[in-house]
Length: 169
Image 1 (cartoon, rainbow, N blue to C red):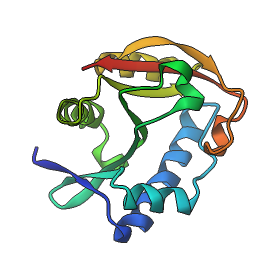
Image 2 (cartoon, rainbow, N blue to C red; image 1 turned 60 degrees about the horizontal axis):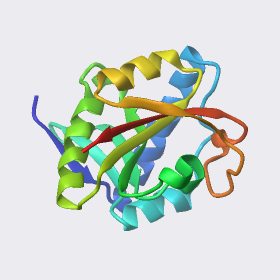
Image 3 (spheres, rainbow, N blue to C red; image 1 turned 90 degrees about the vertical axis):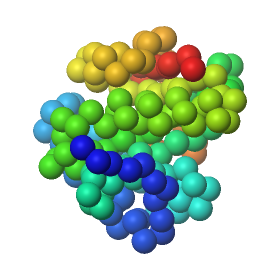
């Protein structure tokens, strides 16, 4: 399979939001929680700061994801020297392509080039399927956190507990 990971562009915004809508529909079918939608300003900022990415397969967007370099509300005192991966969405036509493993490879390289020590993610604490999947992708489950302060985070973070995952680079 030939694929490329590239920065998303402003022209990708509609595609990104279509992917988020597809993800929400899927989440509603397979789990008791789902994303609550995302702010356009957030995605525009991520694109402007080169933190929103797409995976292309034969020039078709197959997956999108975003990164940040601080996540204090979720990681607290451990928030340092990390790339945090958020909102991975694979188009249904490309499920099974193991894009999370490809994102991990990309993040390892990015971390080495930018002197970062950790690749981190979070997901709902009661989603056992994702816990198993992310550990199969090389992440270590390093704990749980119950969200108290969520100002500035997407709405679905309100009042939830999260599993925390990391890879030491």
